[in-house]
Image: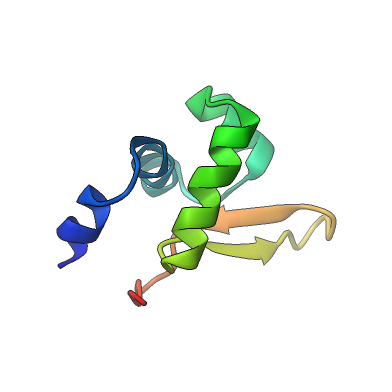
Length: 78
């Protein structure tokens, strides 16, 4: 089931999910640096991942202005 959902995602969303899975939680600017995706494409990928419940957005504990993206544990597919 989970593999099927990943196959139905656009390539950019799959890539962002892969990067977060390998490198752990990170803010948007770090994801941009790691993936080299355009900002608009990254926003689209994150929106898809957030809507599907594959990624969650949290406040950074050190800087409340930053949002940290991470893969939830466990993943609850909606």
